[in-house]
Length: 224
Image: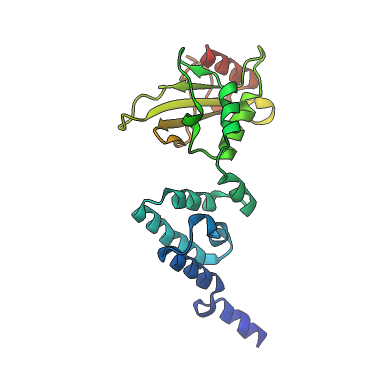
C-alpha cells in the first residue's frame, strides 16, 4: 500500500508541484498576486516539471503584458543557486550604494561623468561586485575599475548610450571583468557579458589569460 501510494504521488493525477504551480499561475492571470509574492525559485527548482511548465506560462504572460518586473524575476529564479540568493539579488540598489560607486569609479573619456540616476534599474548584487572591484586598488593607488562611455558606438535608441565597464575580480583582483552597459532614460541595464581582447592594449593575451600585472596595466591604460 505504501509503494502504491508513493507511485500515485509521482503521477500527474496527484502531482503536488503541478497543482501548486497551476494555482499560482491562475492567481497571476486573475490579477490576485504580484510578482514579488510568487514562489518563483521553488517553482524553478523544487516543484518538478509542473513548476517549470508554470514558469513558461508566466514568461508568456509577462511578454504579452509587458511586465518587466515579472520577466526579470523569472530570469533570476532560473539562475539563482538558492532562495537566499534570489531574495538578496532582487533588492534594488540604495542611493548610498549608487553614490559610493560614483565616488570610486573613474570615467572616460575626459569630461564624461555619471550620476546616481544613471545606475537606476540595477540590482544590489551587481553594484556590490563593481564597488568591490573598484576598491581593489592599482599599484599607484587608483581605483581598480573604469567606465568608458560611448565605447561601444551608438544604439538604435537615440536616447540610450552604451558604455564599457572594467573592474577587478577574483582573488587579489587578478582577473578582469568586462561588461557592456546601456544608459537610458530609465537608468542602466546590463547587456550580454563580453570578453575584452585587445580593445585597449595593442597586444597581449586575451583578458581571461592575463596575469595580475597585465590586468593592472590594462586598467591603468584605460583610465589614462
